[in-house]
Image 1 (spheres, rainbow, N blue to C red):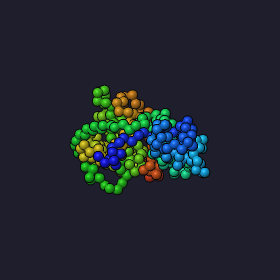
Image 2 (cartoon, rainbow, N blue to C red):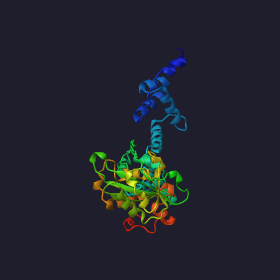
Image 3 (tube, helix red, strand yellow):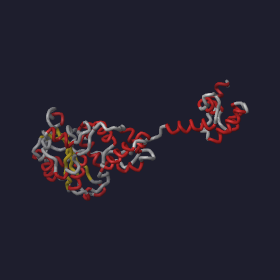
Image 4 (cartoon, rainbow, N blue to C red):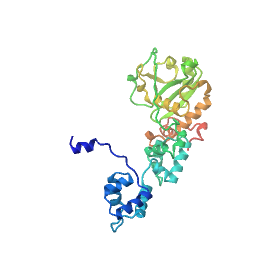
Length: 336
């Protein structure tokens, strides 16, 4: 085997930082004109460490001084980067982020609003997540919707049923103020039909809904009439659940996605996920969630600053587009 191949095959020695005592010994050995290899053997480091130390931290006159070298090393280390440094080093930025995390704002919202309001400080969402996942910001992860500082994989299982007198989504007009509707349900093992009805208006990311005691068609009809009454929308996109059987008497045109195709109504699916992550985790018995509590949840989400809305809230955009005429009374404390 050639020498070059031998060097490549040899495992690289771990890098060791020199401390003050080793620098003192190195200074003495250099003054005695010891060879670099011998100095490395005494200090138990790689010879290249001695070479770098002498060349990078020598004085202007060319001599190596242990105190000067230690001061240079300390200065360099103080400027070194570490996870979450951008947020941790800026007190005003950190206070702003913590305040908004406690107000149930996501890092993406906080970052976007910071830029829109032209704050004297700024951190991107990635920088905020880096800080949250560091030792400095980890305790604030409990204010995230996931309450975790690592991503968690979720398995989604959907079951769709065909219903009669359905009109395909392909026949829906392209123009108009569309809405999407769906249910999220209690775990089947609990044996309860209690569910949450949710309607989303995609153009404004506006959410409206109601808790229902069961998934019977007449119960769904009554709930949808209440939900849609204050909204100005042209049609609804639904799945093929049998609870939507009475759609013809809802007072609005309804169009149906293909069986087992939840991606054809992505906005309501995504926002059900948002409700689940922030407030009502999977496995929750929905009999324990009152309609008043559900309305507060929806109003909090409608007040969130959305990136897709230019970091405005759903309330702001829905008012602007005429989808709603006024802010509900219960939402006043969340809307500003």
